[in-house]
Length: 497
Image (cartoon, rainbow, N blue to C red; front, side, top):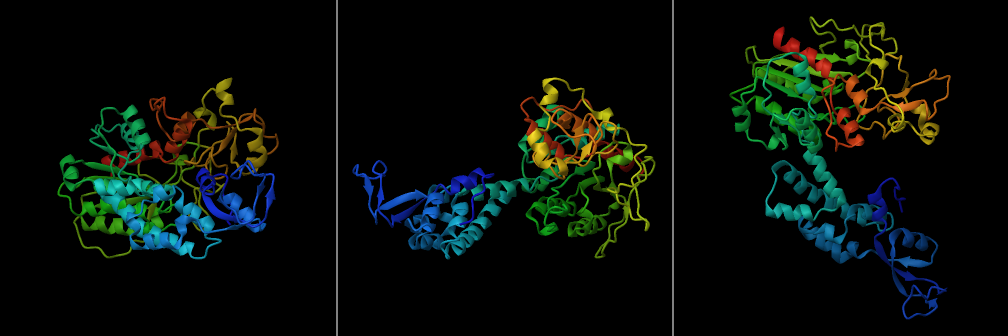
């Protein structure tokens, strides 16, 4: 048996499933647990025990564990006949997770799980793309926990052409562009609540972008599209499957839509993680832009170049529809800009061969503002709420990126900030010298959500609704963008490109 993960409540619940067992020994003193009030439980008596217990007793030869009824030969034949019609949730809310544990003991179970999952996954993907009716509602209600998470993931993967919590909108205002934002799109209801809290007059569409009719985009007649497609298909920590990743589907829909619309936008701005520039999706996008008459420029930029002490390297594409459409089958060599004309950005560091590396320690930080300019004045209970516990410091302190108020660089804040220690953002040592003075609960804390927003260029007017939890605030900011960098690019795109 593979051991259950005690960091996963669903896995803990999965091994609570009961399995039939036959006792192999006589046991005294268990009369209260048996039937008839006898003080002895006899050999060959049958019990239904939680799997975690039965597995251990089976190893010690106290019981002979039998196959769970949900994986009996009769049940497996029923599953094979019509996998999509099986009411899996009624059988077990943790069917797959329980089956993975049982599969170590029953050789045929892994194949049963695979056949069931692959057949039902096709239906899950179809529902996530097209919505459904009463019949599909019945199917959704039959999903177990694993399948429900997959459906949610498929639905979230469509959050393209988004403005999340309003980063693009704030950038438009910071660029002093007189414009009316006609729609904002995002699938995340919490992000939409934050957006509406800050921009209540803008209609927000909470639907999968590729489920919307082309007539909606034609009717909007928008001059500028700003987009931040899902980054998971391109991130360095992921599988980098590019266009083969389901989460790229929504952006591919937008690319295809550009070839069909009569009322195409004059301008496009797209933001994504560094890594997108190496993907096959980039080639698909650029070829379509050339085909429909866009001129484009690509950038790799970092907020450090604008004096913000936060390293967040991102890929940006600017496009303007003022070129002659032509067929395009060519491959595009990397030709990225590290400066925005007329913006006066700080030049990034480069190695001896002239290759730019924003993460180099050789970066010149002299013109970058110190962290203290972006900090809140915390005291008393407010300060204590963000302290790292001594237990966390003792266990993970060595992997944290630690900065002081005088430093001029922090690491990129991700949605996992405060949940994971390494690679999710810097922590603040408010007193002493990093590396010399010990980190304690009294002198080490997390950056507050407001401070993270400050470092990302959000204005003081940006706020969260009161019912947005701290965890949600960090996650939303980690999925957002550098407002000040985008503002510079919007200004250049609309006025000088």
